Every structure is written in structure tokens, then in C-alpha cells.
Length: 221
Image (cartoon, one colour):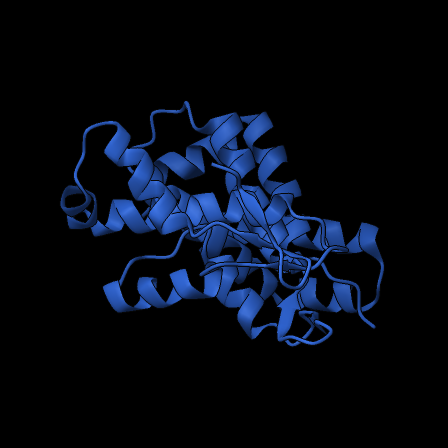
């Protein structure tokens, strides 16, 4: 099945409806629609993964209509009380006043890819690729910490905020590393395994520093 199809009436491109596409793929493996929908958490997370992967592959310079895109999935997450992991970037994109929304001639509007969405989802992709093979005691909770809680707490650090406001990237990185160290130390009792990796695994420590800095640093206007 093609990932995008041309809108012959207006000359635009539209994406597929990922929930239906996922169900069709599962039916090929022998699962019924009822069986797929019965496992709502698995179903919704799989759909979001497909949406993020495709929407990141789109050219922001081209007009594309997204069929039931990420905001639709966010509504389901709220309705089902699912804990947000990489899709917490969706809520940031929706709340971010700097997110660009350009009008479509003769139609509605389409949003450009939001930088916050890209930065935070990249943390998850990179984490899974580089450190997903570690036998985490609760991998889902660790991803939640790394992609949501840790960057948020680091971003709230006053010293880091001051350094970032001065538009001095080098000093801001130093302040961020210090702030990250304090945040990780605050987690030592609840996340012993995560703290041990941060303390003993130089590759993981360097990756986390770089990832959190990319996710939180934003030059002042």
C-alpha cells in the first residue's frame, strides 16, 4: 500500500489512514479486527509509531494532507489515559506558540514539522538504537524518564536558563551538563539502574548530555 496518494481533484498529496493500515497488516498475520482493537494500548502506540515515522519523512516544502494525524492520536491517548512517551512531543508541538502553520491556497491549513517534535522523537529513536539492548528493569519507564522528565527538569534549571538566555552555546552546554548531573542525582533512589549507567557508562553519559542539550537548548530571540 502506498504511503501517500495524490488528491486528483486539487493536485495535493494525502497520507494513508494509519489505524486502518495497521489493522489490515495485522489481519494478514491472522488477527481479527476485534483482537487488534481489544489491545488498545498496543494498537494506539503502533499507530503513533507509524505516524511519526511517516510525518518525519515528509518534505515540509510540499503541501500534504494528513489523514487522522498525530492530534487525532493524542486525543485517543487522553481518552484512554495512556502514558505519553515519545508522543509527548505531540502535546509540545500543539502548545508551542512558535509552531509554524501555513495556509493552503483554497483549502484549510497544514503545519510544518515542529522542531520540538523532531528533537524529542529523535531522543527515542537514538536511545532505542544505541541502548535498547540493555536489560532495563522497566524499559518503558526509563524511556519516559529520558524523553520527558529529565529534559523538562533540566530546562527548568535557573543557571542553565540564564546561560541559554545569553546566547552563549558553549557556556550553556556547560551549565546544562551541571544541571543534568543534579537531575540524575535526584533520581538515584528511584532509578538506580539508570543512574549507574549514567555514572559508569561513558558512552551513555555523553549521549544523554548531547540528547538533552539538543532537546532543551534554544537561542533567545
